[in-house]
Image (tube, rainbow, N blue to C red; front, side):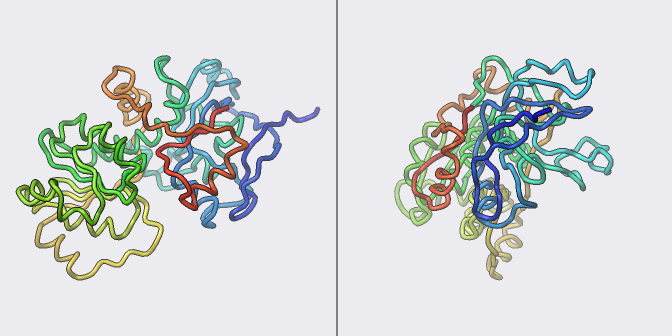
Length: 350
């Protein structure tokens, strides 16, 4: 029997992403075949394609996605057929101590759709039935694809324990940085500041709740400086850019006994000088790390992120800056690598 084929963006080797016809995957027991309707392009996909950090070749990247379940690998999973869903991309081993306690994001032996196995830069993808969550009818497939980064930022908010009235500064106004600001604003942060080197991001950030948006060099002047000096620093400083200088800026801007949240993936070596360690020690800072999100169909960062949108508490639609067809992806990723255009969230639509 002739195999059914599908279109996919296949990473053949470092820097070579090609649109190709490959066999449509077949779901096994406990798995679902998902017809992908939207898939976000994550900032991590750029180094994955061009930086030689892929776990293997060939690989179909893509881990921020939503779609419709078309088939199930067994009768028990059949209840999902026809359902609109989004998908938690981390596949836990369910055997390590962290999985046994329900902390799947800390799994010792996890798989991952779009990095450790084929993901959703394709018309179809096979996913574990235990990893899907219903997509509310009120939300588009594009917003469904935004759930993964929204949940990551929501998880960072829980880790940072943002409280009403706190002063928060976010270094890096990419999708996760702005999403964190949205959740912090919703939690009651009264003085929310965004720092970025790209002024094109400022208008959107301010629309989504940031009180000030400034260049790093402007932290010592403008109207913001007077407020900053009177505050003696921020209760929470968030590094969401993956830039070493921004990390140092976060340490410098945190108030005494404040918190520093490390949210961005550092792609280069970072050297902290003795004075930076002195800031941590003498200001008695609490440094927190985060990288993923909690997942459950009952109560999790994913449910929190979806419910906030469904209930009208937040509108994440303005973050969807660009939509494109699968065939446009290789060229668009090249432009993203070269910083040839300003964007917030790029979504592939099928």
